[in-house]
Image (cartoon, rainbow, N blue to C red):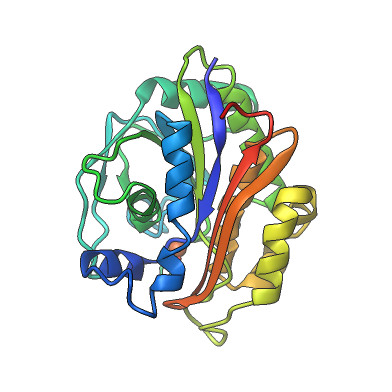
Length: 283
Ligand code: DHB
Ligand code: FE
């Protein structure tokens, strides 16, 4: 059966792509953010995942307000990036893993998650930039990918409890897939930020840090918040932290933190990074 080697959760901000393109990683504004990543890259070199299940939220590129699935899974041979307008370079297509995609879809639907299946899917900065941060300058991306997209754009959003259960169902799916593949779960979004409206620029460091602690030790504490309470605590886009909770749901048993970083702000966002591992997971 396939193995989940661990989970990486990170913020995604388009400006990161601009900083990479202009080689600004060592500038004082960016250094505390980029310096968080080498330990995670070292870990990835050690655990050698074959596939990344990418839990992220689309921002209007592949899904718009006219058709907005709550949960969608890609089942394409490759995923094209077409994220324009931020001044970030678009990147070459990402390889998919259609066998795992269809296994996930079958398993989730039989587990009562009625998801949208996408045999074509454009991916945006929430998908491409974390992969670029984790495997820099590697074209094509060295892992195959399966996109799992969660609506955080148009209300109603799935609840935190539902997202946590989705993560658990993803783990059941991966761990029942007849394959010797090694799978890393990557959750991208958050932490606190609000890009528009009266509270534009809102950041809540105290809550973010508590969230990161609780995510490891007591994820059900997070899962009990309503989406409106999370929006109040973290901002209208801070709700993207649901991706972190979903990724955490895919780890079972004794979960430990291997590495984390937190830096504010990057653009308008509190930038967090965390590497979590099931302590029973093979090294
Ligand atoms: C920013 C953050 C996001 O999560 C996003 O998707 C777009 C922009 C920002 O801080 O600029
Ligand atoms: Fe976002």
